[in-house]
Amino acid sequence: LLIIGERINTTREKVAEAVANQDAAFLVKEARLQKEAGADFIDLNVGTFGEEEGELLSWLVSLIQEEVDIPLSLDSPNPEAISSAIKFVKRKPIINSTTGEAWRLKPTISMAKEYSASVVALVIDEKGIPEDAQGRLKIAEKLIESLSGAGIPLEDIYLDPVVLPIATGRRGKVVLETIRLMRETFPKVHIICGLSNISFGLPLKGLLNRTFLPMAMAMGLDAVILDPLDKKLMAALAASYALLGEDRNLKGYLKAYRSGSLD
Amino acid sequence: LLIIGERINTTREKVAEAVANQDAAFLVKEARLQKEAGADFIDLNVGTFGEEEGELLSWLVSLIQEEVDIPLSLDSPNPEAISSAIKFVKRKPIINSTTGEAWRLKPTISMAKEYSASVVALVIDEKGIPEDAQGRLKIAEKLIESLSGAGIPLEDIYLDPVVLPIATGRRGKVVLETIRLMRETFPKVHIICGLSNISFGLPLKGLLNRTFLPMAMAMGLDAVILDPLDKKLMAALAASYALLGEDRNLKGYLKAYRSGSLD
Image 1 (tube, rainbow over the protein chains, first blue to last red):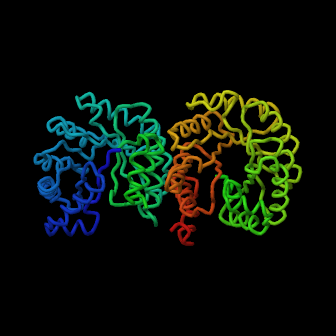
Image 2: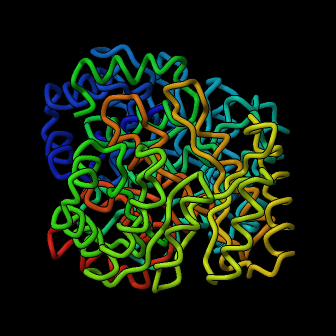
Image 3: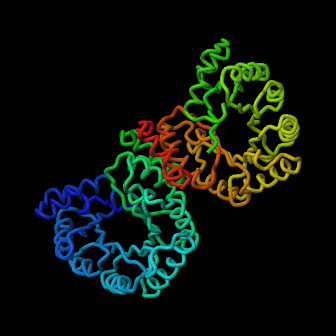
């Protein structure tokens, strides 16, 4: 599983304060801790800052990559904000995210090609998010056509089935079925989701997140945006690898057990 | 999910002692606690007692059903042991289990018809357990043909994909794929598994069990043999219902949260 650490997001109050105060130490530490906990990428999201988003995202990119050796995920629905920041990126980044909507997809394709970036593509189009898995798969097919057709390699594409909060009555099952169909249809493409959306607004979010992750992995998810400092979630991840045959001779599981990190 | 409580099994040392000493109080308490924790059936397994199995199973059946109002699962690979005990059963029982092997399947069918019992049918035949999901599905098809053909209603059949310990190098993924194929092929049949087999021989069994259950439920498992006194497992179960849309308005989840049983 490719893990994108989600903690540097200004919807978290402490992160918003740190960004507002240019508290470099706090932000660098958030990145470093996530890397140490197993993150492969660090997500950067300053969406709450509105018009300053591009400028602050650029500042964050420069700050984090100077201090921590890890690639970055530029997280914004706004291609302009990503465009200002991606210029400063040193290691192959992930553009997080585009949808099938032309105003996002076109500039994303240009940037992805110019910077050899990977792309997270949400199965949303001008009409919104289909309720059912078949509808979501159809948008996925169009996204692959556009992205792959423009020359972006399949292994740089991360399809996102769009996790909505079960608190709003949405069924996690639709996401699971979408993942399964995507995996069947596009064996070479990555499938990613923003895990914690599933538990938004509910008590014991951690329990829901660490119960949903194994389900999604069983369906074929191979990348995820999550909080790698959630120890119980990471334990569920280690157990999932072991259960799904992705941990040869259970070496990873037994090592994690002996280190005490599964307790 | 239909839950069969697994604790009264003489492979557990304390249970073996209690059975040997005819310690009725201990055994009744084990049954009662499991019922209170959410079990729908109580499994009874005295397989370690060899030749006395039938006699002890009969004794247990009479004891438990006199004290606790809950149906029973008669757990033995030996149809003769089940045959001695099923005579005493008052509420519709589950015969746990048969395979596709004639020496088990034939007497099981007779008993199931005579006592209107449900049947757990493992996807094993004379040649053993197929390594792959397609092979297991084929045996499932034959089992359904035999059982249903003999007049046993589909809703009384519990197909078991056979969970083997991942510690022996078996991949949990095969079980998951088997469940998915069974669910697709036989929408009306129950699918059950013995959950704790998955973690046999490994440290932190609970973590593996509660990570595997959500995966199996996502694939279509609708019955399970487990330890309902494992609180973290039951919390994962409540979360799974919520995530899979099987908990209307999340009432069960929120109630369990408020009662503190998810902590």
